[in-house]
Image 1: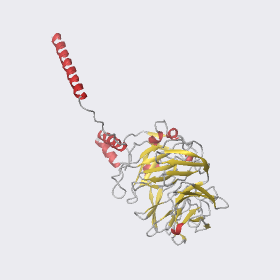
Image 2: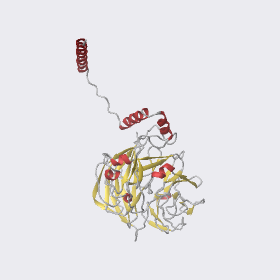
Image 3: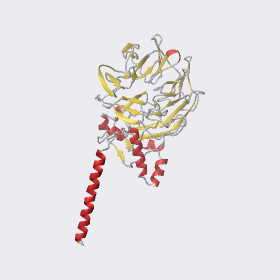
Image 4: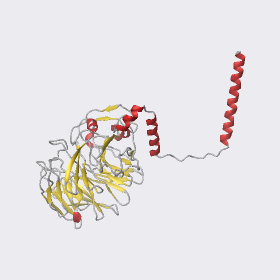
Length: 448
């Protein structure tokens, strides 16, 4: 009996070997046809589909109704850091990577996918916040001048790399792309205004003030006038006439006991809106240059005292509204330019529970039509649909880690007080983020 079993096993093995040899010969006779490489978005979609396939029915329901991924329930908590501008506790919850779908627009439906995260090549080390400006010339090179250190960072969008120019400048924050072919760098700790010739890529500095005006933002209104609010107790509005280069200054109605303003946006008619950073009223400068405060209830963003409410302002033409995202605040301010009414919308409670106190440096309108926050002392990002006011958020901590044991090591950030990124600039389907206290710059890639 044992003999019969052994004979049968030998027979089966011999047959299997023969079949294997036949398969090898058949394969060698067929010309290999290389498969096209799958894009990162296709791979991400397949990964997500496989992830859902492996879920239980209850997990699928949870995923469909939740704003965050069900990939993992693990939480990361890091030690407290001291910010150069305010102390904050840093706590994050890991979520899975998701990607933006071009088939979903802000006008039609909810957004599911998130943009891809990418580090640019090249590193620029240093402890101080490096730049809070981004101005692109017509060749696709982004020029960023220093904030508190001499710096001129060049970002090459052709190959996604950064480098430091040998000659730098400091004291600038924010920039305005003017209709006259130049982009202006705004002075916070400088007495000069920087000017980029977008055709040639050349940067020149023009001394315009006797002392530092302490502006934090600006926008071009009607008649080619750039309005720049000051971040000071008594609010001043500095002006630059782009037609003749003349500067001016006036004191508008004050938005509160603290006049500080850190944001400005103009609608399609040239009316300028400035949300309060520490005050409680919204300042408007109409197309004729007349300034006044909007009527309505006090603007609080859910905070008080020296907590910065709103930084930046973004006009969305499709809805004719200005959106202002918070720094320390807990709400999003929306101004309707058709009648100057406004409202504040709460950020999601689950986001506020885990987000850093310093949530955002400056918002930006992305290629998918949603408004996104720019990372500051946080690896989390929130976004709002300007048509429906739907708010979603995602943690990019894993992407910031880039294979290291922490986001701090992966990004090279010195402390949360110097920020993960600052301003943002959109080019096609990509958004480049300003290099803050990290040594590595990032961009977000949206599906074409």
